[in-house]
Length: 163
Ligand SMILES: [Zn+2]
Image (cartoon, rainbow, N blue to C red; front, side):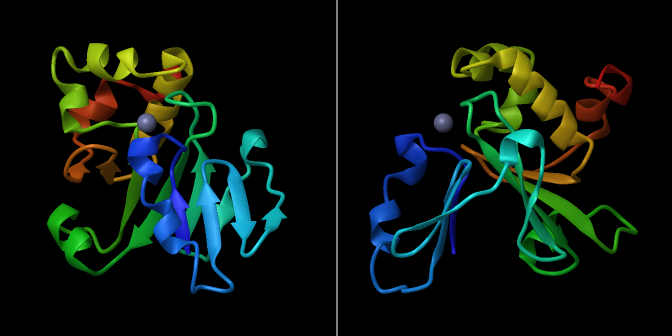
């Protein structure tokens, strides 16, 4: 299975490496899902319906950076990322593998909005999606930097009441 959050070349440049040798692979690029070799699967991401891989992993539409961006939400209770990102007392966290919905933790610096917004197809829509994901996850794997913990001040900057 290969999941690309969106179709920008810096995220899919090596996709062809996965095109052979896996007869039943599932390939997801943004809102497109294909089961090899050439069977496209219809899924209505744009109506807000998550694509559930299992009880721990689901893919949700998070447009803005591009119209087709998706985020992979992973519920996890073990492994190096869980150990690095969990807060005291947490036995499970949700990690958002978010592509360029968040470029890096530096998005939250004083000049951070100007940076990610300059590369956004629709920064208003992306802002709404960023809020949604910040309130659904405890950690984010961004498109261009190390994973980071969702800090309370990140969530406070986008209160639920605004959503
Ligand atoms: Zn991109």
